[in-house]
Image 1 (cartoon, rainbow, N blue to C red):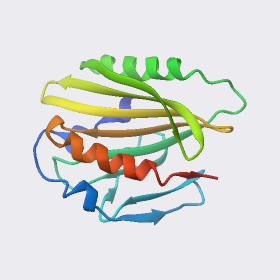
Image 2: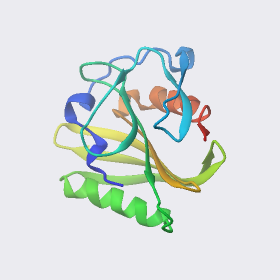
Image 3: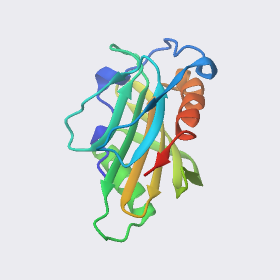
Length: 173
C-alpha cells in the first residue's frame, strides 16, 4: 500500500488544538456495503477524500488544521501472499521519498476484529514540524488492511486512546 496518503499537510499541520476528551468521545456505528468491515467512528468527524486510489474510510477531526487523521484502508490480495514486513518497508520508503525523516518508536503483533497483524508507531519530522503515526497492517483472508492514525505529538496521546477505542469496534465481514 502507498504511503502517499499519509498527510495532506492541510489536514495535519502542527498545533495543540483539542480533540476533546478522547475517553468521552462518542463513537457511532458505521457500515458501507463497499467495505469488508464494520466499525464505530467518532461522532462529528468529517470524511476525507484524498483522491489517492485507496479503498476504505478516511476521516479528520476538523475542517482546518490542526486535525487528527484516521484511515481504515484495505486492498484485495487476489490470492497473493502478503509479507507484513515488506508492507512496512514500502510504507517507510514512501515516507522517506517525500523528504521526511522517520524514526520507528515501537513494533508489536496486534489483532483487531479477529485478524492478526503487526503494528508500529513512528515519529516523523517534516519541514513544518513533527507528526506521530500509528500503523497496523492486518493480513486477512481476502484483504490486506492498513489502519492508520496521524497527529501532532502534543495531541497524540488523546488521539491514540481514541484510535484504540475505534479499533476495538472493528468487525470484519
